[in-house]
Length: 452
Image 1 (cartoon, rainbow, N blue to C red):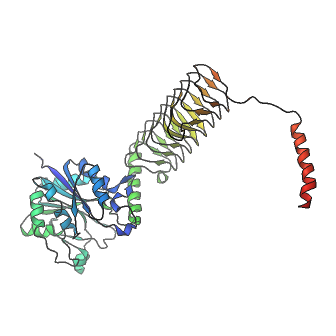
Image 2 (cartoon, one colour; image 1 turned 60 degrees about the vertical axis):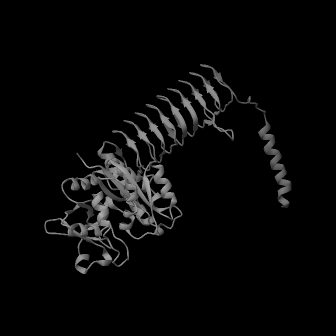
């Protein structure tokens, strides 16, 4: 029977290089805070318990973690990664499974990679460490291995010799071990090093001294990008977007200019959807088969039905539901509105807090006047209705099925099915008025404006 799993998520760093009033691990990648990424990773690999270790300076991290359902433990004062994991010991009292140490500022590790780490423990290793080989090993801790590939020790850069610094296989920080062994070894870690800190990495050497087996699980560098600055945050976002674009195209989505399309962590797009250049998907968007999202559109919290068309230059805000074969055209904004099958809003319109029936046509320049300064109100347009151009629908109001409204109308009362609503002032033509107006203006200009 597989061992039970738990995760210790380290999130106590100061994050000073971010130069932000927002705690580092609450900055977003793909529209989701980095802490949420790591907690979701732990959940996705079946961790029955997650403990987020936060610092005294960041109660916002504690609050965010508890809102996710995680346990929390405070590290105060910070004395290194080993001390941080030790801070979670009380929260894991009585746990007898495998523990993996993850980092809230490393958001892109995949469940498949974490499964490999746990698999190494299942195959007999006592300690498994996630390592990678970057182009520039820089100041990463080095993974020193035996000729047979097993891991002997981890040496922090500041404590490494020149020969050890020449090693290119480096430590990601992720480490897994049986809970009892992990905390037992951590109790033996000292702070006799260049930083005067208690290193989690010392666990490997201590395990080897007891003849326990330690192994390295290899990861791609893009997965283990840690975020310490705005530059790192941009790099993580770029890596996420590149990964997602590739996956979307592999799944059958056409991206006309992939590098210009941006996705959120939960974007769902079905096969045979076409996405034109410069489209942004915020969180909570799903797009069904054969739909087209045209250039320069922004979607968030919206569902787009099969065969529908959105854009160009359209904005779908949260609560928008675009039905099968419906059309949202250029410079149209939709918010908390449902459009039925085949409905059309083709030009220059705002549709908010509305239900638009199947086959209805909303003319150019139409707006739903949904807000009275205090409350939002509903507009209902029935199936097959035709709303004339430049109509203002003053909610709450209903336009019946098959009804028409004349162009330029301000509709304040409900319109019965199949009726025509005319709600504009009667046109009056004053013969000769324009000629008299110009003559008077020219005469006034000839007298008064010469002296000025």
